Length: 224
Length: 225
Length: 47
Image (cartoon, rainbow over all chains, first blue to last red):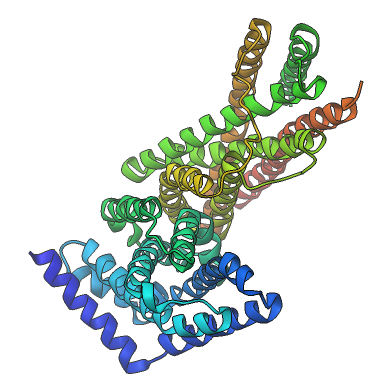
């Protein structure tokens, strides 16, 4: 399938760009770390408070970090007009989005997992026993953040005040992801951990709806 | 000028009509007392805002596929007018809630959804003001508008599920429960009046947008000279 | 009647929002109308 082969080629380019420059990941990781630490200092929660507040604070930190991390996605294609080159190189413009959102999901997931031990330490929660389930929730949540995030990165790149526009567009829209991910994470960190199927269902529905929307409307997002 | 005054006059008539229906015709509610009267303003505003946002969504889709400026004008107008209606909802709601429940705000299902809707369409309008070129502004705001509207059912279901995880007392018991027929008629007629208000405001705002487009065209002409 | 002031406040606030919005639309239209006149006259002068 040409779409998949184009997308994987472009995905390789995205990953190589990041691993060569190493700009995005270290800065994002440090940012989330600082935010989580600040939350921990500000609230210094007791153990029961940590269980209640922790997951929400964690996901808010992820959302903030994603708003920053997604900025360069389409901005850096404006230098040297590489976006036109990209559009010419593929038949289906969705390949460009697919590659970018796969890369963004991967980077987000990577930073989230790197943060997990620090979160466990600051907030005194047990993560090892539910680690695979947490990865699943983080994956679905990161996908949920990355899909509209990549789309809106293309929009905000064309607007003024773009650094503020992206969070402004993205964060209200991500309410379902925030709610579902926070509840799912909280359920997993409880004394009797359970995988909340309702929350996962919402995340999966969100991912499907917006992936379809991106597939339908992606080509218009790339118009000059 | 005359049309503006005529519009304002119609507005006053609508106010008088709804006031009469709500306060004189409809009976006083048993348990809440007179404060229930706020619902005659609160609920029709909410319904009208949903209609406005639905129109915005339709206009957004039409613009993306047809690229005629009139759809962009309709989309922008419907979003702004819808925002006005939903602001009324968000203001009248807490004024009702405080005497009845002792709190101004809570994150129950309906309030959260209304709040998120409000944020989404504020973002929509802000985005428009940050995109200078008319074609780009029309296209990208339409695309954002489409995504925003698709989010609404997801927000609703996610909040409803969230509330099953943390049950809360139902704040708004739903005024449809055990409705006196005079109340039902009042609601219906007030909603009809609000639909008239919606059309009035939409029409005015649409004309404004069309005028803005001709100003931009004139500006371009002036630059060429 | 208790809570009457709340009812009054709600109706005043609600209708104030509608009225102020309508006024804002009317004012923006007047501003645009003036600009159209200005642009038209400068275009005519230029011709």
